[in-house]
Length: 375
Image (cartoon, rainbow, N blue to C red):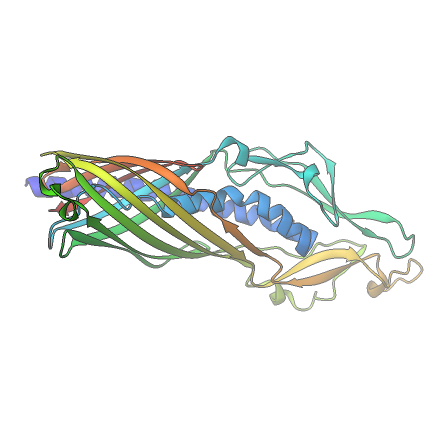
């Protein structure tokens, strides 16, 4: 009966973590969808804006991937195991919650309204500046506005969440290995898969008198890779002054998405103590992460029509024309975290464990997990 009650508690806690994490992922996906309008500004300007807008998402997610590996400094004994789900939440620093569009060197964009401050993906839930897309009118030779869009708002909270499922088993020589794995999961327009591998090795056995030390010393390494894609839709603009040569082929704009690949690597030196009910630990380490973003598909942009003729009433000679951009986004982010400090605990209630940790770095991460464990 006691075991059944514990499993019910685990199920409830896991469900709560998944709901919290899923809500964060869906909000992030909504930001990608809103940011699709930025692609109308052309390849160079769109990459420049999205680099700033998505920077906290990349840095925060990279920090999340490098968290949650540890719940004790002591490795699991041979055939001991731990199976848990955790949720990491990276905290976006104040300086990465907004940026100034007037400080960016655009080719075709100018701010035409609103404040100069634009929100990043995890900034405030307020509309950003209105951006005008400009080009040279072939008739007048003057630089004129073609169309405009408003920079998207942030999620409204400076937290980047990420769920994680991890299994750990003890092997030989005071060593345990961990595996993170999630097959491709589809939620609405979001497809996500994950793989990771980690190892922790006890150091007491190699130190003179290490077996009588009052604390456990160990070293830990971990690598995680996540791939995901977010579908969105950017359709051609319409108007009496716009000629769309692709009007008969609307399927051309299908398959638009942001494809993401994120990797994280971390290494830590740990010191801790296992007590009958609770384990505590602390440590220092380093971490690195990288995220790449690409945009498969074709995207419509509105430009001035080189064949514009105000005296000709045919569609082909209208003032503006829809052009096609293929795969315009190609971004790479290196995580802002390097050296970090961490501390955490694990509370054991029979087979049920509750763990928590905090990593202090440029993007701090709080992590909480629940699982089943046998040492």
